[in-house]
Length: 138
Image (cartoon, rainbow, N blue to C red; front, side, top):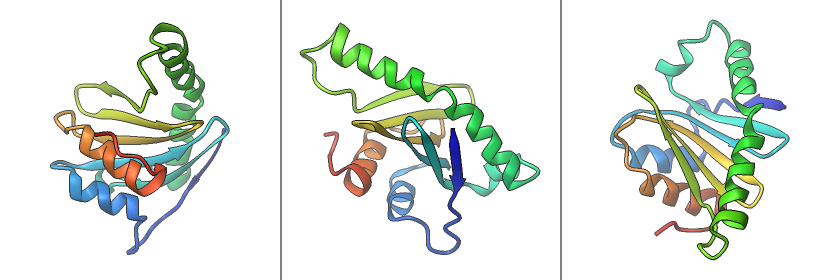
């Protein structure tokens, strides 16, 4: 999977600013992805400091996104097989001890967010929907 890091410098992407306004805790990462590639839009300083180089960070995200097919398969499983009358899968959440990972979907694209485990998810889904996918979750 091909990945890139888009350093926003002092001018972050509008979706990153919208997410920052809607989080109560840290916004660790924002990554836009599809089945073939990903673009790192934001990595917080404390998260970036865990990597010795930018290349090491991109390599770590390459390992994460090597499994993106599983996410899309699970999304299809729920929307097409298990609950076909329930509508579209908008997002999935995985909560670990130190981070909550939220994946927000629109067709064959997704946005990966790393946030505090206590963070409310619907406002984040709304921000991504408004700024990238043109939908509102609520």
